[in-house]
Length: 320
Ligand code: APR
Image 1: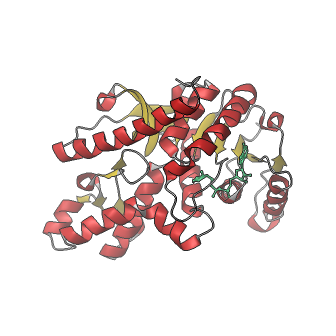
Image 2: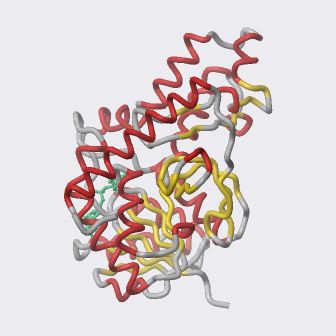
Image 3: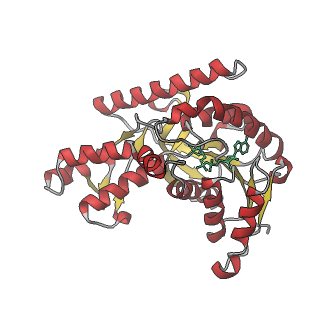
């Protein structure tokens, strides 16, 4: 049986890291695609040359022609521009919307059966636009945000509690940005919810609030340090976890920017929600009941995403 084919649209910082991880994990053969000739070919060859040492047999190639992504099983999209210090994710909207148009059309023509994971920012609006331009089924087009946001939350919590990151689970909802909604009552250390840990004296509410805020600002913190671009290691790992869940039909419960039509009272909208990812793509959206404060935060987040989607429609009248 042939190995699965993974097309990485955008061979920049995240794209290269995705290729490296996909190869090391032997998820399939990898095609790196970019508009800049040389970069995808160079990164593909460099990673392929690590194969004998790492012990993987996955084939890697670079491309500037969409024909080379033909029949990909998974497409992970990072094409576009990243943030610079002082920019919000939303500042990228106009440039990256044009990129989503060309990428969406390329996927529509050459890889219409793929599971598509969008990473390009501003994430919730870009995954919506990518779905519109590609015309793929909604359950096959998803955005990577929640896995990364919850990984950041888990990392900070494990440092605070002095316990293994593996034993910390976190739950985040909403858009990928300043309005994301970390749900502390569903975030746990080995099943013990965070509010209980506060009562047990493991931390204080003030410290927990500060960790929540640091999680919301997690992307900006990295941009501020790097100065020349945005985070790429943790975003790439997060998207690979989603791709693996699809390729191996794992039925993983992962927070993703998914198309929500019905749950959470939404009528056909992309936003971060808990999902089940398996061989059919997004197989289920877990419709949890929100408390009053949580609902208010979620509504604010949804409104922020709606504003971005409307801005996209203002730029391209053919959308939606
Ligand atoms: N088609 C294909 N590739 C493109 C296109 C296009 N129309 N436009 C730009 N690219 C490529 C660039 O040539 C570059 O190699 O996309 C790549 C982006 O890589 P980086 O600039 O290194 O950005 P990266 O850090 O990988 O982030 C990519 O993910 O997290 C988001 O905000 C981030 O939107 C940004 C995206």
